[in-house]
Length: 209
Image 1 (tube, rainbow, N blue to C red):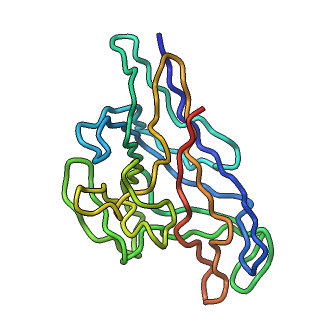
Image 2: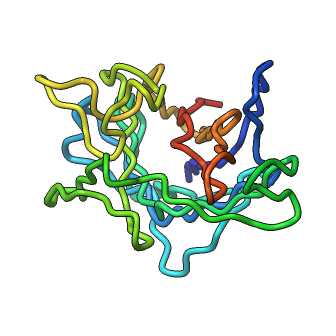
C-alpha cells in the first residue's frame, strides 16, 4: 500500500520594507487532483473532503492521503489542482492602520480581477461578495508563481497562454511512499492603509519531499 501525504505549510520570508506578515493564516482545502499533462487534462483525484475545516497553515496540517492499494500511481505529474475556499482568515503580526494583531481578518483572494475555471467545467468571474469555491492550478508550464505575473492562477494554462496557473518548479514525482507540501507565502502581502485589513494574493508553490 503506497500512501501520498499532501501537506500544507507556510514559509515566512520577511523583507526589509513596510510590508508585514500574518501570524495565523487559515484556509479551507476540500480536494486535490494531479495530472500528467502540464495543461491539467485527465486529472486523477488524490483526496476529497465532505467536512471541510479551516486549517491554520502555520501548523503543518495533513490535508489528505492517496491510498493506491488497488492501482499504482507511480509517475511524474506536471499539474496539481487544489479545490479551496477563496476566503482566507488571518491575523497580522502587528497593529497597523486597519489591521489588529489581536483580531482575525477575512479576505477574498479571488477578486473581480480573476476568473475561476471549474474542473472540467465553465470559467466564471470571481466576485468580492461571497465565499466562492475556486480551483488553484499549479503547472510546470505556467510562467510564474508571482501573483503580479500569474494573471489567472485559478484557470489552467494553455498552449497559447502560459500566464494562467501558477508555476510548479518541478514535476511531482510519485515513487512509492512520497509526500509533498503546498507552500503559501503571504509575507508582505497585507495592506492596512484602507478602511479594511486586506491580504493580497499570496504566492503559491509546491515542494516534493
